[in-house]
Amino acid sequence: MSLNVEVLEQSFEKIKPHADKFAASFYENLFQAHPEVKPLFTKTDMKKQETMLLKALVLVVENLRNPEALSPVLNALGARHVGYGAIPKYYEPVGKALLITFEQYLAEDWTPEIKQAWLDAYGVITTLMLKGAGQKSE
Ligand code: HEM
Image (cartoon, rainbow, N blue to C red; front, side, top):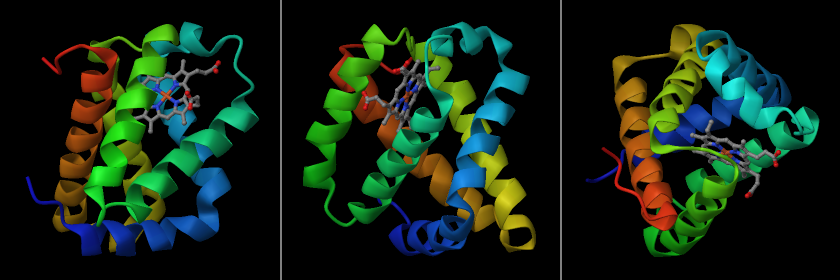
């Protein structure tokens, strides 16, 4: 799988000025479409969580050209997610919420190419996280 790094970087640059709102909207979209994941976050400080999610996304995008660095970080992140109750079937709803949020914020700049690039990237992220969690993605 070769990722469309340029498209990922360019589209993420457009999100950066609205990063805080983007992260808040992501969780709104996720909880609206999938209220069943809400209980996982009952003890969570959502403001902090939004910052951490963004940091993780920035790290991923900044290291797309350096995938060897990304694997151990995402394996470890996936392993920690077992303790958060993030079972494999929740990865798809999270990916969908992420795409919907990108579409909202990129608006007229949203294209099928960008959508495909993020679908591929999220697939790679999920595979690496679930590998770290000791589970397969199916
Ligand atoms: C692209 C995939 C994902 C990324 C980049 C991501 C990122 C993060 C990060 C950076 C943290 C902070 C704690 C840590 O670093 O260990 C975190 C915590 C958490 N994530 Fe994720 N996550 C992803 C997928 C998911 C999925 C699929 C779920 C399931 C619903 C989930 C649920 C949670 C929960 C419940 C916490 C803990 C909140 C707390 O500390 O109370 N995450 N996530």
